[in-house]
Image (cartoon, rainbow, N blue to C red; front, side, top):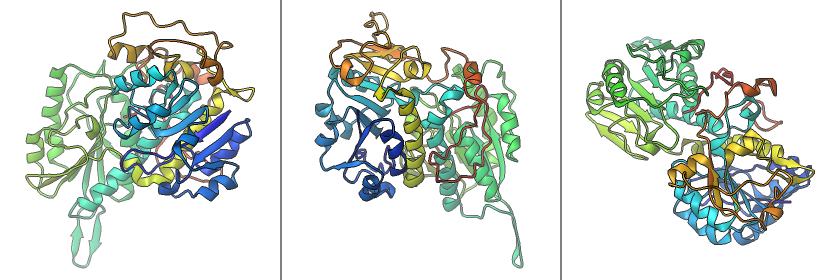
Length: 458
């Protein structure tokens, strides 16, 4: 079995899918690891570090695609333009592993399906305790929440902490976090460390305990939120009347703060509008909004993706790839997640996909010339068409065997919208999720680790 790490082609993407420290874990399971020359350079990992750990360097992308398993941070779907050039290299023997935005860009999954390749989407890792160490979205959200606060601190024309000086007292900045997912929790912790007065709001009342455990104040609005959370712990999409009332109530809270960080997103759908233009105009000049939901339209009405906008003296930032700005640790965390994911699929020194395994079932998007994820099929309008019957785990499970099979299209479950209770696997593995993927790295996690049935993601 050959596993290849290729250079990222998405503009501005500096992360790499596998770091040198994780190479020996795959080699020990019988894999030959190929690394496209320069793949880790932007993240701070030199080619010689890979070869020192047992990987083999290849000097062309075509040579890298001679492998059976291709690892990418951004596969086609999460890399619509530049990623299309890889289509001619993708064959039916390949298993592609990476972020591919199957719910936001389902047509890209259909294009991959035509090649016959197997596609495993890391966005769809199920929210069960056994899969926490594979959860790429949580890892990357941690970085985004941290970086968002630092961006706001740079833009804000005042200090974050309360300071008593000979020149007078400097009041602490007031920060509001909207959306208490992993990014929101990390933003709270980072803003508190910088000395700000922090408030946080989430539509799910159960988030109060997590917010208060970090020393922030939980904002309550007079809204009916009994149906705001699904069985997996995610915030559910609401009716427009709910959002209209929510915007009205939030406007007053927004106006009282110097920094707003929004993180509310719904997989595959437009981000809910939470901060209106009128609310922005009610903020004090010099205030800052960092909208982490900008990639899907943003939570703020004024947001423009990857742009710095000034409106009535308020600065609005809409970054869409903050984890890449912390590429070294972003790659370390991503690599640890991917390595654990791959190791869970390797049996008897081969990659074998057991459809009875919830992790495989939920992440499998394409197989045997077919989209096999029910949610993606629905988005492609294939929901009423029969999908090819999946082979049993001992038939055609490895990449080589899969090359001889044929198929069509299918699909899977939206993250956490629940084909199965998030707590079902609690007994399988009670270990806590250590975001540090590398054994030789120590990390002090500022955010409390949520239980499988309480956690959340943006």
